[in-house]
Image (cartoon, rainbow, N blue to C red):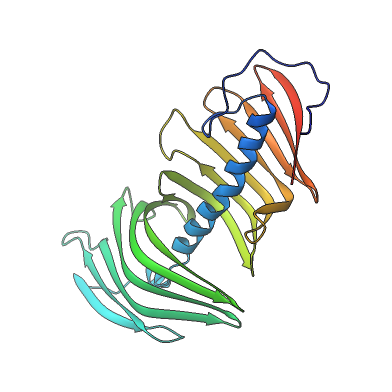
Length: 262
């Protein structure tokens, strides 16, 4: 197996864990696995972020309550109901029920079935947060590739005078600042931040993706980088190449570089 570069070794680190950065060959391989495994986490968060219905928020109906339905461009529909505060007339909640709601763009097609609920918390009319709760089946097809996923997650978006920042919870992970595209079996994570244990302040890795290109058919990434940090102050940078990964690990103040081949 590949050996580390001749950089002096730091003090001994603990055994590799999916929630810590460790300075060893097996620790480097573990980080590569964590980074690639969480591409699917980002894809699921991105799917929830693209759920149809969001455009309604730009021009909310007036009145105490509002109910209706909307046809989807590719067939199917979704029903929605809104409640507002009787005094402030601010929106309190929005509920959606998707029925085979299909969106088709060229050779890409996505379909949603299930429910979504949005709950609002206001500081002012321009500063507020929205909590989202999804229980959906999401399926998509691109050319000959098809996949179906279950989206059962919560997320929160903070709106501050026109700017928006969102965090999507997928299982125990929390995803934010994501920009993702998929073509066939290849996913490009242009940017994303993943906390592997969500809001927990301990036993947690933070992964920051930059132009990470991953092929789910091979289980390999071929370009891009991901920085990784743990709650003990250790960090690493995983860089994908055409033949494997370079993993630069800083543990206890000392940096060691490892190669993890395909």
